[in-house]
Length: 254
Length: 254
DNA sequence: TTATCTACCGTGGTCTGACCACTTTTTGAA
DNA sequence: TTCAAAAAGTGGTCAGACCACGGTAGATAA
Image 1 (tube, rainbow over the protein chains, first blue to last red):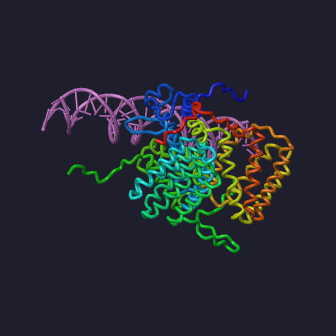
Image 2 (tube, rainbow over the protein chains, first blue to last red):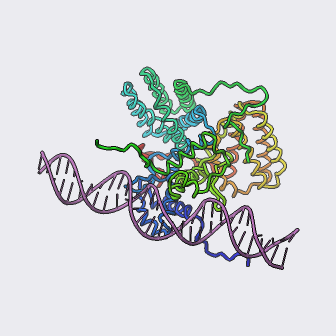
Image 3 (spheres, each protein chain N blue to C red):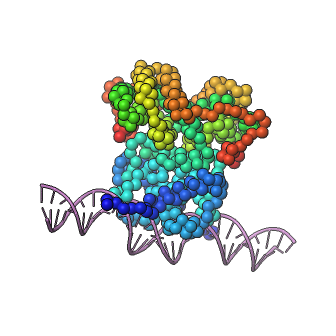
């Protein structure tokens, strides 16, 4: 009789909490924006200590599934899907992500997203895009306002693409890029040019021209990249031996 | 004198821990694979309770930055960069991700990744790819073994792309897809065909033909998708009113 | 009556210290 | 020498108390 362990109430309380909440979400009991019971009460319900419950909730919060508001309560995340805010930042510190790499990822993803939006976008998306373009033209002299509509424009395209996973990926990268972007002081003429590019993208999407939408989006983003001096450093390939910077070491694929 | 608060030892202990460890990583004190001090000791060092320290560590672990091993210690994650394992799964439950959407994201990302690898791949990557292709041909009759080399092949391409962010994105999606994939019983003839496609992709990368590499990769993945019956459901667009399934509701862009 | 402030309450945040569970290392007996 | 038992080291859980924040209802002032 090697091991007789019929019941195992162990199995990490953390995951117990995570799975429990996952079930509540999957079966519709918990919807985005909903509030979960207070910690003390919820802990009693699950028959675990409040400390363990908090560990599980913290886990979910770290991944952007839950939003905790001190003194108010804990809620299921609403708004656009997004991976943990600090996630990219932390991973960046660990693996030496460069800003130009974030931009490259964004260009690749968002260009494709624009093409998908052109294929699948619905009338409601077209209307929303048109509105944002109009708002952009209306706020050429208000950098803060302009930026908001710029962000919304891109977010609507994400939704119109019909692929929430790609949308979430983009959202994560964009939010990480946002801080740096905000610091850039753009000239009014830049904004005008930018607004017109957005309008062209909108038209390509509305008239369902995926190839053109992709091309325009890529062009737009490359221009934005250049404006912030975030291009990929010129490739000066090492002749023979590779010079490894501190974090450039190649993962051994374990 | 309304408020005299020169020092603010508050600022969420959790983030305090996160930032502290982030700094240790950024300045090189902590490298992937390193072990951090025992909780009791570390907590004393940071002048916080062990409970708070654990909250912070849990946060980092949730995002895949730290790996906790009960009875052994807590370590900085090594291996390929990857966002939290359960992350996609949780987000999927919350926003109704579909399997075909995961596959679509993978196709888009990985095709582009193959193109980048063809542009930037180094000799070491070419060698590693060749080895995996050889191993694949050598294990046509061993599904488990074959799958390992298949995964490694794609992972090496990720590294060769020179963009660790895109690599991390792919890694996350792939690992989420892995479980479903493992269940599929593939025929030996399928594997042979698959292996030959991999070889062609390898050749395109080695001879630095980005367009061809992308095309082949896309072709390969679409075939894999079909083999598992994960295509996008045929678009039967609703005539007038849109029928919204439970999770298909459009985010209101907040 | 209306506006404002303040005290209270509910909720998440932190602390303490004890004990449990898993691994690895050491010990000591066969 | 071998191997099983004990000890040590580390993360996991628990309990209960108290702190900090945000919202709100009642008290107070205009």
